[in-house]
Image 1: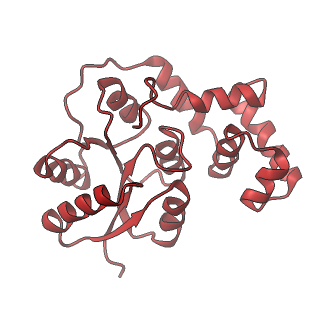
Image 2 (image 1 turned 90 degrees about the horizontal axis):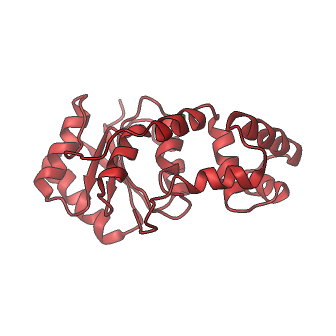
Length: 214
């Protein structure tokens, strides 16, 4: 039987090391894995189905704000994700919750609070700090639109948002160019967008409003 595992996805080595130390002290029964980008996160989840929880930074290479959270939740709906971010504005916390996170830990949180939040989520609960921001119907509607995409369509959408042409997307994802065209058509329809640019703007809206690293 595979050992229960926690995955820490953050592109800052020192912060990853600090989180791993908390996990080893508070949850010694769990094995830990690391990822430093959206690509290595995806590969780790494919290779390790025993992962029981993901601790996710919002600003890794290959991500657009909340895009990695939406992608993981879409591909692994039973896998809880706890966002860890240096941007702990109430609206950022609320958006993380509305986009499917099971918890939110500010990077400034003490080790004890971090351990408590992770433990709460592993026990089937949630781990959010108190929030002042109101629920946003616009974010709820945005999350519902993205939820219609298949994991492959979401990958195509992120490439599209980076300005890649169909031929480049096909090379990046190992697909036939015609398959990419079919995906793009389906993406625009599901997201209710009239153009690739409009879809890219929608992805841009997943980033934090103030432009700071999340």
